[in-house]
Length: 107
Ligand code: FES
Image 1 (cartoon, rainbow, N blue to C red):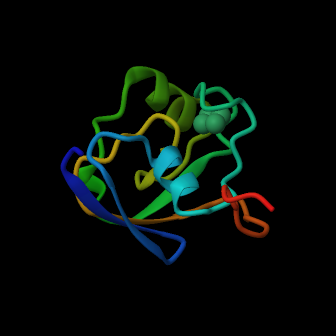
Image 2: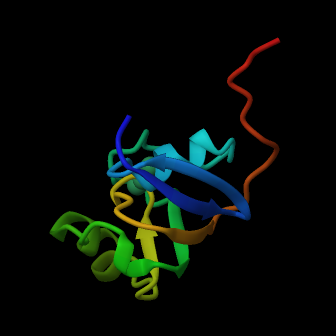
């Protein structure tokens, strides 16, 4: 098991492996996080607002920067959940509404 990092996503608190994407952490938390392009950085429906710990996410790639800043012009604390990797404690919220919770346990 790798280093565990505490995160809060839409108020759901959990510990995740350092280096996983915000989207993966969100889904692990059971958040029904919209990600229409399947995590390929194309749709921006996964975008999140960073409330604390912005400096604990991976550096924004040129691709992500173009998608968010150049094309859609979002605020500086908005990231693509599928592209940003968790390096330290962070608190964030999804921008698109979520409906219900994911349940990986099945019936
Ligand atoms: S899931 Fe489409 S940009 Fe992140």
